[in-house]
Picture 1 (cartoon, rainbow, N blue to C red):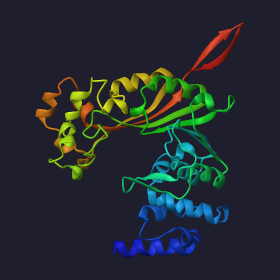
Picture 2 (picture 1 turned 30 degrees about the vertical axis):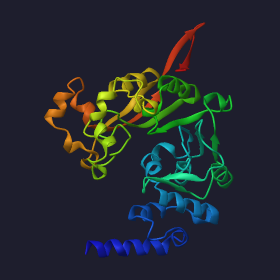
Picture 3 (picture 1 turned 90 degrees about the horizontal axis):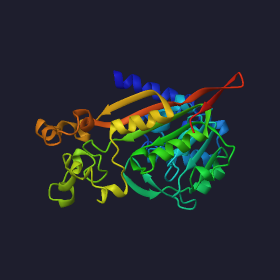
Length: 318
């Protein structure tokens, strides 16, 4: 009965929203996509935009912008470490006023992107240059903060699974603080190095475990913590190995923390393999350190009130 009601609701939605007839292919779209995409205004989208959005859905680039949609609607967004830039389409879908993707390694002419659902790189069909042509409010910058127009400011800076890779994270936070408006925010999702799959190697999920793989045996079940204080190993090339407490202190240096959510690993991310024996072996770390998968943080730019000549003014961090 429940499934019948759900099916009737979906069919009704598909009849009411003309957009669905143009964008959805049942084999590539999940139920949540059907429900969320139904709110789009087909009259404001070109056929090419619709095709690119459909592709972004297939690649899994709408869930993150959807999750943080309340923070980006009608906002000027700075996406720090935007990678291949495919999240830009999701930010457009969920109402960002403008989107600027910043990454020193972005290739304007490369149309390959990571399919988040398949966990592999595939041909996306649109390059960053194509996306900028398709969505006028989207801009990509191959560079650093100094490469952004001097007077350009943003309402919010977002780092999606980027903070764990930056060896100059303090400098990046400082750079962000100089680019935000006085009431600006920072929002990030941080993948904790000290969780079961914080090594970013295989296995990334429980079902990836292959005990005949010698490389996996080095990292599995928190084995990667033996490299935590080694700055010359393979993992250090792409991971800064910052602890949860260090990240908190560094964030607080520039921002008033509004939300600090320590998200525990799920069973498929290895939490059930955290035993008393492992905790004892790595006693220098807390259970929280080893059990926390992600940190979801929202912070407000710090502003200090200064007095001069009898007048007061706001001076923001950076």
